Picture 1: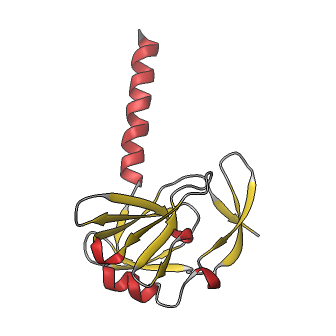
Picture 2: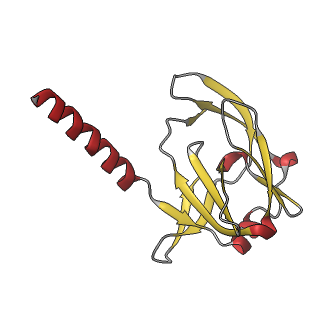
Length: 146
C-alpha cells in the first residue's frame, strides 16, 4: 500500500514539474514574417543533433539562432534556438499545428515545417489563417552537437 501511494505521489510530482517547466512564449504574425523574411529552404544549414537514445542525426535546419518573442507579461525575450524548441500555430478555426522550430520556413504565404523528427512528414499551413503563435521548449532530449 505504501509503495502504491509513493508511486502515485511520484507520478503526480513528475506531471506538476513537467507543467511548471514548460514555459510558453509568443510571436505575433508580423514578427514571425519579419524573422522568416529571408529564410527559405535554400538557406538551411546542416546541423547534427543527438537524440534521446544517443543517436546522432544530421539534417538541414533554418539558420535562426535566437527567436524574438514575448513572455506572458509582454517582456521581449530572445530565446536560443535548439532542436527541442517547438512552435505551435493556432488557426482562426482553432486547429493547432506543432512543428519543430528549426525545421520551419515561410514560402510566400505558406508556413512549411516538419511535425516529427522520426518520420519525414512535412506539412504546410497558410499564414493568413493564423491567430496565435506560441514557442515552447518541449524539453525533449535533443541537443545540437559539433
